[in-house]
Amino acid sequence: MERLLAQSRRRRNDEPSPSPEPRGSQPAPPPPACEQPRMQQTDEAPLPIPATLEPRHRADPQETRASLDSLRQVANLSARSAIASATWKRVKSQLVFEVVLAATCFGVSGMLFAERWRGAGEAAFWLGSLAAGLGAVVSAEIVRTTGWLKRKPNGEAPRAHPHGK
Image (cartoon, rainbow, N blue to C red; front, side, top):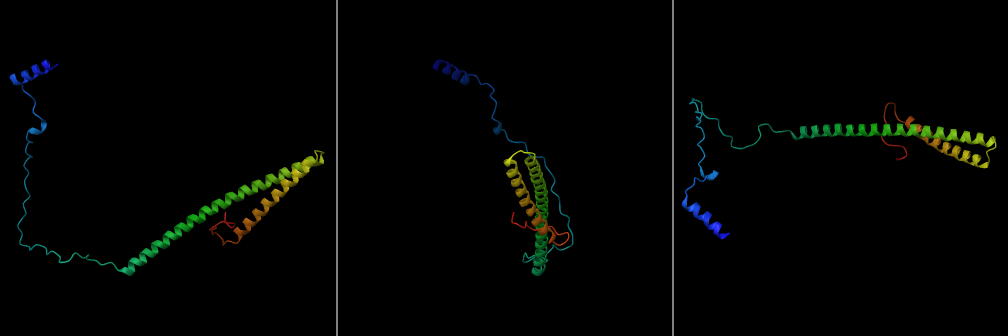
C-alpha cells in the first residue's frame, strides 16, 4: 500500500500536470464602470439643517385622547353587539330544544296513560306520570325564559342568559 502511495507521489512531482486552480484564487473581474451623477451647479443656497429634530406638527394631547376615547367606544359597542348576538342565538336554540323536549315528554306521557287504560299495568302509569312531570318542569323553564325575553326593550338582544347559563 505504501509502495503505491510513493509511486503516486513521485508521479505528481515528476509530471507537471495542469491542475485546476481553486476557484477563490482567481481575481474577480472588475465591475463595469458606471458614471457618477454630477450635481448641477445652482445659485441657490443649500437648505438649512434644523437645529433640533422636533416634529413640525405637534399633536394636541386633548385631541389624541378624544380620538382614543372614541375608538374605545366603538370597540366596546362592537364587542357588546357581538356578545348580544351570540347570546340571542344561544337562547333561541335553547328555546327550540326545550319546546321539542316538552312536546316529546307530553306525547310519551299521553301514550303511556293510554296504554294504562288499555290494561298495560301500573308501570305505564308511573312512567307516564314521570314523563308528564318532566314535561311540566321543561314547560316552566320555557315560560321563565320567554318572560325574561319579553322584559327586554323592543329589538334589543339579551346581554346575558337570565339564569346564568
